[in-house]
Picture 1 (cartoon, helix red, strand yellow):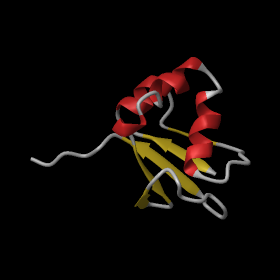
Picture 2 (tube, rainbow, N blue to C red):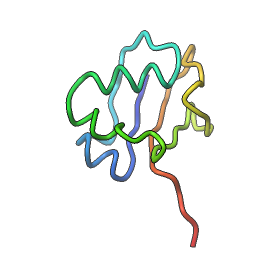
Picture 3 (cartoon, rainbow, N blue to C red):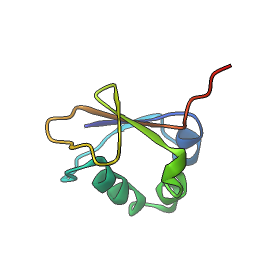
Picture 4 (tube, rainbow, N blue to C red):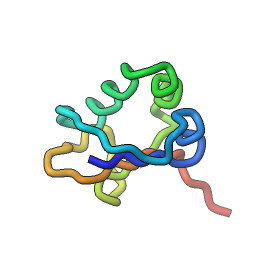
Length: 81
């Protein structure tokens, strides 16, 4: 699946996107898998209260299933102005 990183998540990880092969069943499982890769991922996902997620371009939460998903995007909360 394609994993996209936006704003400071992209800066901490150093990639705007990557193709990820995973056995993760939920977004939370994917986050744990990514955090275990390298310190830069652990730093990016350290405070999940500051991270939002979209699965196939639909806002969702960490319990969202990944079966059949083609894209997961991580980004900080949006603010209006």
